[in-house]
Length: 214
Ligand SMILES: *[C@@H]1O[C@H](CO)[C@@H](O)[C@H](O)[C@H]1NC(C)=O
Ligand SMILES: *[C@@H]1O[C@H](CO)[C@@H](O)[C@H](O)[C@H]1NC(C)=O
Image (cartoon, rainbow, N blue to C red):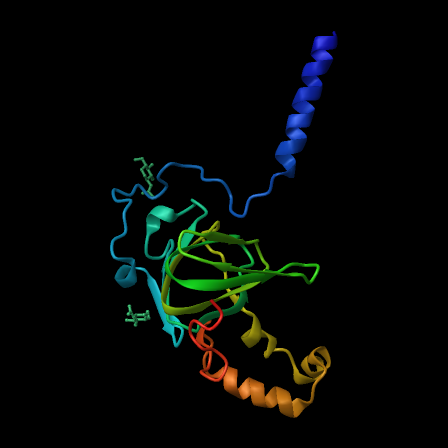
């Protein structure tokens, strides 16, 4: 009798733990849902989802260019960022991100948590850092040579929201209140950021001197 009660308790506690686990993407139902014969993508800077800006180049491997990732809950992005290149503050609403610096840099990395605390660090080749799911984050190459790094995101569709650019979609009465400033100041900023929505920017010479902070 006691053994039976014990078993029920073990099962109940196990079930509670299972229901408290949340996943970014649904679990895969099949080994190979698209019946693919190839599980390799070659030369991602040509065959991946390539985009660039003044700060550098990135190539994303995702379901659009590499169907093998379908239903696996993964996206990988490789970056090559110039000195003073910035991946400007943004969020991925559906993924956590593990960033690994392969060469160059160092990078200053950081995210802001929901208590408003900034978590900042400097990372060197061989280091990895985590941006928790949905939180505002950025990275900047503080070094004198290109930084090559790889980010793995645990969703096949992480989504990217550029924080600065999206803020300026808010009507100016609300935005001026939020930033406690004048419409004229907002207009000036909006003009300078609206033309280019890429998140790969380069810090101006007036602000960033390669190697100064390392
Ligand atoms: C994959 O192969 C299975 C078994 O042959 C078949 O039932 C299924 O429809 C195929 N799926 C696709 C997406 O072609
Ligand atoms: C540095 O990165 C930029 C952008 O990816 C690239 O155009 C340039 O050739 C790279 N420079 C070196 C020295 O690798």
